[in-house]
Length: 290
Ligand SMILES: Nc1ncnc2c1ncn2[C@@H]1O[C@H](COP(=O)(O)OP(=O)(O)OP(=O)(O)O)[C@@H](O)[C@H]1O
Image (cartoon, rainbow, N blue to C red):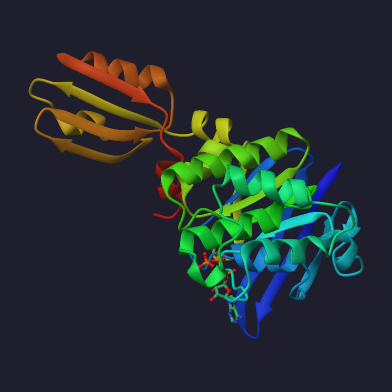
């Protein structure tokens, strides 16, 4: 079943563009990455999905239902972690979380305890006494406590130290294995690469690519570095080669094209070493934003 489906979803803020003709089709069980630089339209898309703002055009469905007509019903099954969180500073963590849980049917006290202990969050502290990272953890527990079918994360890891970040990813993977679909917006590509199976790249309000992480890495550019004697950079200045660079005894570049042609050229050199690698998502990303 399609969990998130958008058709030509468009938002203008007055005259200024938020997003234009965004088409997404996210299936149940996916961990879907949504990446783009600041101002690309990630938060606008999420706010539209949550029906916090209205579109200027197009439509969006979650769980097969229109987000405008079924907003409250849909949100019951969504766990949302916003990029910025604001709380009643005087409240204790456990009171805030119990209050959040009271909006849902069912008893989530055990779930709160389990998640908090996994995140090493002290339930007895007051919000005002928490560091930024710990406040973030409160948001994570709050977003996940009702076992949502869809988890929407907007730049979730800012402020978490690397160990906590890893813990957080494990929790998200665990929820995914239990059946939750995850929509993960980020501009940190390495984390998208670590967690997601498919990714959409958004740029200036439009989707420029939707691709499997694996395909994106395999079908695109190879990252090649060659070490040898008397290297001549011009030998590799041909079609399909970009970012050609030389320092001392090493030439590096990206290549998209027939690998046989490349090997022929490499063969002409007195080689010390050659490395042909998949570029990181970050490097692929650079290609779209050059
Ligand atoms: N309330 C608003 N009024 C006017 N323009 C807005 C508003 N909110 C967003 N925009 C514009 O819409 C575009 C998309 O912004 P959006 O916040 O969705 O991007 P983003 O990818 O989430 O970036 P960031 O990571 O910085 O939040 C930007 O050009 C932004 O300036």
